[in-house]
Length: 283
Image (cartoon, rainbow, N blue to C red; front, side, top):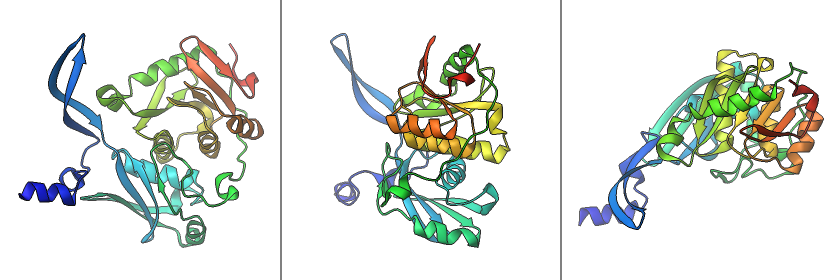
């Protein structure tokens, strides 16, 4: 009877799981060649994560509960809530039975900006702009990127292939995006994963900022389409090239063109398409 009551009060099992780990084992039936077998499968977690600044909740994002300190910094920078990494004075990840809070302390001079941009909806897994209530809140200030050195097509191909070896969560459970930082030679030096493509990129940018990486010394590669929000985040970082395994949107192409970013899509195997500033992709 107690188990039935628990199920009624907590139908999603949030209290039982506690969101402690990014992967979860579940019972499942697998069919193969007309035969089924019951066993366990790994699935990736999707957790409500509340970003709180100086005690005031800002937004709830659905994210994978790993590398959340990187996420806090990357999100704060790319959403232009803070001016520089030093403005994020403290970060504490607090896990509750029904989700996670990232409690961040920010410089007092950033509070008014954050208050003016507080979102009113949950940021769903595939949404980078949920809750924004104006066009100005979506289309942010243009950030021109520096020229950067040329990147060989073969280096982009190597980076896409190299990123696979960094996708440990996706290898275990699938359904996970990745964003990687590659050297100009095509070696992925750092990667982050998340069920949300925007979250994966924010985590990567946060990790790069914490390490003080010069954004002109490499490029970003992502396992998703190149929407305009992804382009905007990369321009805030200052990287000169973004390569995606899928295609871009029209707005993404326009923003990249205006910002001076080289936007590469359909980077799969020996094929890639350069949509903006093709002079930066050269043998």
